[in-house]
Length: 156
Image (cartoon, rainbow, N blue to C red):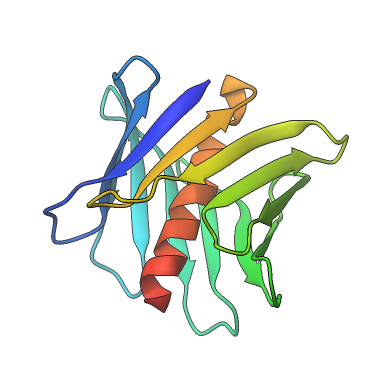
């Protein structure tokens, strides 16, 4: 399953549209006014399916994840010199990025690839192509990409 993650150009808060490989909107993400990033994810019927919320006052960036209203875990950036590393505690996944921070691979504990994420360069807004092996993992992978983009935005 391929998803295209596109940030909207003109918006007061972070907002994104997530398209499937046929150009249909699958998810809509709306940022909310808060201390740190707070991103609400809605399905194509307008039902809230998840939230990515930045946890403030931490040494390294950390984001809490919610499926609906249920807390499921967090994603945190780990200290690393050459390649970005993230710890995700709600699935048994490992995440490895390239040193330019454009491409990421998410791998399950059994060694199977969960997703590949590539940032498209030379675009006016942040745009990522997300290739998810199993559609059931799409929301979890999307949450990681939202946290990744929010962390980069905060850093810059």
